[in-house]
Amino acid sequence: EHARKRKENLRLRAKSTGLETDYNIFKAARKNFKRLEDFKIRQCLDMNDRDSVSKRFWGQVKVNSKATRIPPIVNNGETFRSKVDVQAELFNEYFASTFSDSSNYNIVPNIANLNKQDLEFSASEVYDVLSKLNARKVA
Image 1 (cartoon, rainbow, N blue to C red):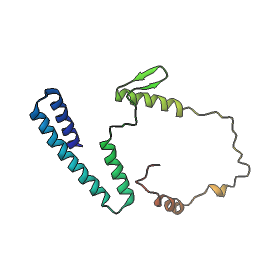
Image 2: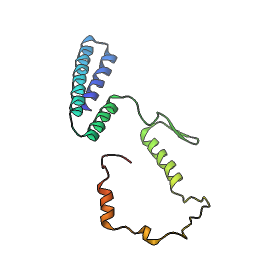
Image 3: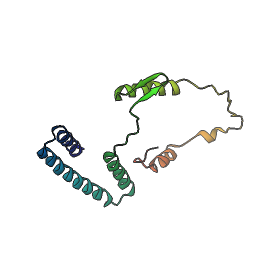
């Protein structure tokens, strides 16, 4: 991350000054960054754990991509926001209003045939299920 930011700062300096020396410094930093990037990707792909390789590979792709999951301007109704911290508050307000109130779908569950034994779990059963979950995998 540090190398990418350094390269970007040197690019901006070279662009603003227009000096050939600044451009040459930027070119050298870009070349070093690409070497480091290639090394990191090869390092990730040499590992034996497939989940780890996939996660690290896509982490590298994310670092090198200019794409973002959040658009530059977010709106909720008539409210439009472009600053990241205010967007976070807008998302928080939206999700709180959507998921905090109890829903009323007029659906009455039929529990007449429900056997209480179906709802009992032992600690070992819960442990067995939880131990089989892949903690590195997001739901």
